[in-house]
Length: 205
Image 1 (cartoon, rainbow, N blue to C red):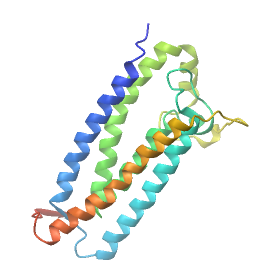
Image 2 (image 1 turned 135 degrees about the horizontal axis):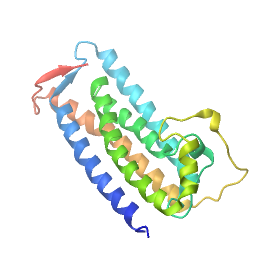
Image 3 (image 1 turned 180 degrees about the vertical axis):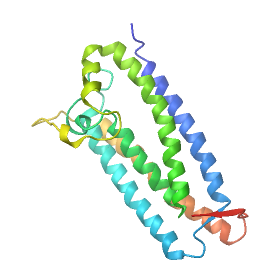
Image 4 (image 1 turned 60 degrees about the vertical axis):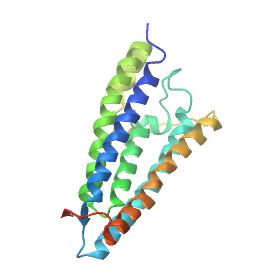
């Protein structure tokens, strides 16, 4: 019989691993100077990143309208979950790029995405084992017709109504807003570099 607490433990491990990896990436950003000779390009990357964070927060909130509180009880297959099996994580990848882009570096932004993908991929594989054990053929059929991450827009399907659970929507929205913390954090790191509190060791695009 499937362990009902398995997904919760997986999520806790995922959050701890993601936090550790992102802190390491932030430490790298602190000693890196990005596009120093091309200020407009540096600022452009930051603006692009902020747009990606907005997309992430809105997208995650949209997904929560469908999945909130139902992940352990049923297979949700409508709305964003008809396009791919893990749209919440997909929007998190977009947000990870946006966070990294607040350094002004495309390389660091992509590093954030790689870290997020690596952590979430391991998490998803664990979740898939649990979901297969719990829901059996129903979940296998869903996997057969729906991609894991990359959306297949031709598969879109929806219902006329959905049952919204406000507490889960608001929790997801709150968690998503944490992506915006990257803006003041990396602005503070840039200031620390400018005044000499943090020594820049190398540059990257």
